[in-house]
Image (cartoon, rainbow, N blue to C red):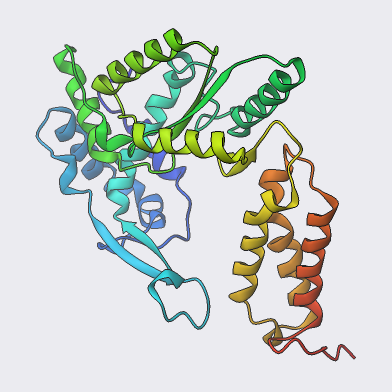
Length: 326
């Protein structure tokens, strides 16, 4: 299934699944070009896929783009006020889309249900909910246990294809290897174990063996976080959400307040009509804490602080003077 020859229908389906009205790459051809002129250019595209399947096309020759800096605010002057994006040629994106469609047919069968993200029908917050409930259950039953939050080095730059595989599989491996870039935000996991030194040694041995065939464990970062939690008893963050056996304090929601401040600093409310301000408040500000609120109860003090930020933006300008809404 994964290594068969590319068919015209699967290439056509991949092209028409692409989102439109997107910035093109260096060649200037957006997805709309391939969709509108599919009947004219399909033979040329299929020749590319046939050459790649026969090993006569290096996919890396298509994998290049232009890095563009987008300002986060109107008066952006410093580099941190810009967000970089890379504009790739759609011709390369077609290969990645076809590969994604093929792999998705078998991914649900070969990836265990314990991986709760990056697959249709799975929710990334399931892992956070399990960790949250486990912490409270251990504390409630007064049971001893160890929970390690383990950091990994950048995920895909450490992957190596080892062992033997049929020669006909080389095309798929080269396709995946040529398309994947470093996925930096998939860099951690949580392991539960009993409070036992022998289990800790066995886990360290397994992790060392694991990094020989897959991603490398960042032992120094993991140990540092563990020591900090032991000494300070502070909430540890998992997927950006603070975790602790006790009820979270207002200070643990500081990241949400920082997001409010950062967002408001980039807005110029005095240039907007009242309706525009309401749209920003309801669609942007009110959605910032939703990720954490999906599993955690928000303290009253945090809710009051968020209401303060919203009302301050609506009623005051940059000099914190009352606006005349008449």
